Length: 162
Ligand code: COA
Image (cartoon, rainbow, N blue to C red; front, side):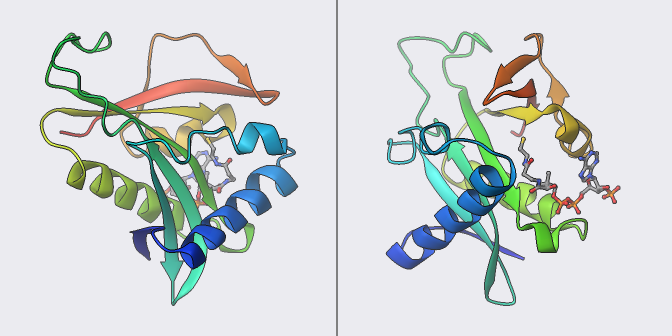
């Protein structure tokens, strides 16, 4: 699968289509919850996965611009460290269970690394049922307690990518 940035109007429409199908139609997330106003922020990348030219997966990276030399990151204490967030990870229902989710995650990590320099930590809010998926990719639960988001239980997980 090719994992690419949705950088044209058409690709953005396709990215949004996957998120709508998976999170709004399938999981019952509301419009306001899904379109949370963070898509257009600096430091955000909207990403999609193409299999044989067909868009079958989507994901989002946030806070790729999080380095602040004047304010060391509270998570790491390292002034030079980026703590970016990864989310909206979705594979079309018709294509699940064939390794595309794993390929999507590898592609998201590659794009995060390409768009940052220095130490990079990726943090995500895993729906509890999917925590095994992320654990198999090297993400570990953080100290944060499990929490409800959009009426779904989540656990925060993180991985030091670089
Ligand atoms: N729990 C534990 N392990 C899981 C899992 C789960 N829910 N889903 C997949 N895995 C494992 C697979 O068995 C596979 O392991 P293997 O490499 O040892 O065989 C590995 O993770 C990769 O699986 P893959 O086929 O790449 O996953 P996928 O294409 O089905 O995608 C999701 C996984 C979670 C992205 C997909 O189920 C999805 O889009 N779900 C709906 C949206 C969603 O809930 N996203 C997560 C929001 S936090």
